[in-house]
Image 1 (cartoon, rainbow, N blue to C red):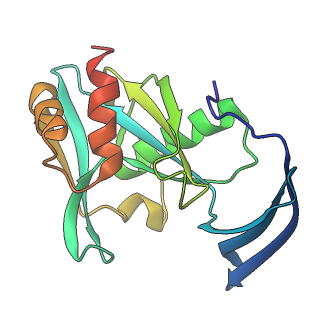
Image 2: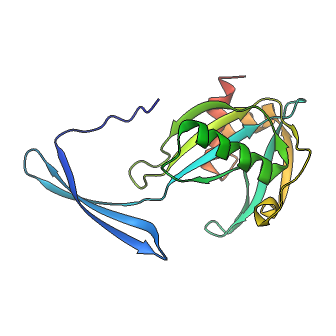
Amino acid sequence: MDTIERISGWDHSHRETSEVLGVRIIREQVHQQSTGKHETWRFVDFGHGVHVFAMTPDRNVLLVSQYRPPVRAYTLELPGGGAPESLSEPEYMERAQRELQEETGYTGELEFLYRYHPMAGLTSFSIRLYLARSVEPVKVHGTGPEWNEIERVIKRPVDTVIREGKAGAYADGILTTACFFVEQRL
């Protein structure tokens, strides 16, 4: 369920988009309120993300460790990736399942938890978060570079991950936020 309140009284007709190599990066919109006041708003506009809080039968969470140039560090993250705006809800879940398999080599039944906008004032990006309670290794690995994109997969006890996430121990905000949502479902 989308909990965003759509504002009436704003005219969104004037839009200007900046692109880099064909990918929309910054969008500038001039809004006109019903009062006649104009306001310019700039934000990052780039699709959506799907992420999976995946647990093994022995209650270990699968985290991926990747080097992230923007923060100049290795981070622990949930398996996941980007997804275009145009997918249906079942297609988003399929995308999340594929990301789980590609990044960890595991698969399992997914449960939709929540969709949220982590920085609604700066970006249109939204995240769909899924829970997989009992993942198992895949029988056959795929081919291609996406199957080798993660430096390593780390298993950590779910109670430890949730405690550390709620304490702010992780650089990745998606993992930190997921700890609060998942705790309510366990």
